[in-house]
Image 1 (cartoon, rainbow, N blue to C red):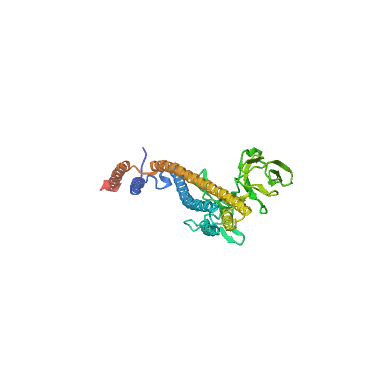
Image 2 (image 1 turned 30 degrees about the vertical axis):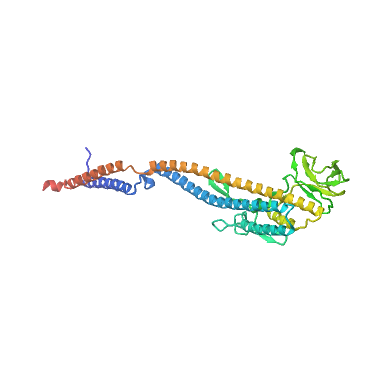
Length: 399
């Protein structure tokens, strides 16, 4: 039969009281915080899983903040592009009015002043800032004013960079466009080639902007159409090699290498017209050229032909600018939609993460209160039994 010393009995009873008291304090703390896990010791594996869930929620919250920032900046850009579209449409209406043969020189000068005012407005719009005071169209150089009026026209001081914003673990969204992409890279003419009349022409021939009938047949290069007689023309490339020839009739289509255009009026023998592969032109130059054209004389037939050709080119270039801005706006809308779709997915994921975290960490109050009562009863029983055991010494028995 095992013997238990008095000290051992006291120590064992005391340890039992301390253990029950610790368990009671733990349960009390859980009820006070509403959390089942208040330290890793409460549930080591559960605590690790809870940390992973916390980390996932923190990451989702950061993605949400990133998405909000990108949305705000893209919304600013979308409104700016809308204002640019309205401005360019207004300029186009002015150009159509100025191209009318009944408008006199004084009225055209007034229209030129209106376009110049719109050019100043466009420069101001292009230098807009977002809600954080950063320029919308400077690329990475968001604190540098992107556009400045120089002696040779408007100069771009930004770069071609585009900031990417992480909106999910698998998605990055560009939060804007560089001013170089929006304002400086607009295709000339119809986008494939651009037509022009030689400044030395003396006839009344006016060349149209033309169209591309067969993109695969177009050979990039610069071509010159020259009237060799009153009814005949030749088209030569940059090395003066004959490419095409034919009979000229005012208004009839002229086609070569997949390109088609028409010349109307009566060009003089030796008059030249250019058909050149499209480069790019900035929208500020387009408006400035329109101002210059509206101011020039169109009294003689040759001047009128030159004016009509240049006005036709200006209208074509304005249409290109409007299409270009519309394309950029479409990209902005696509990005905003992508952010919204990602946000919806993230919100649904957050609901599941929070539910999992709640199931893992949050306390079942009914169970905890029941456990608290049991632990309290156990502690009281241990304390009561200790007081009785404490009286069972040999001396108390002999007494």
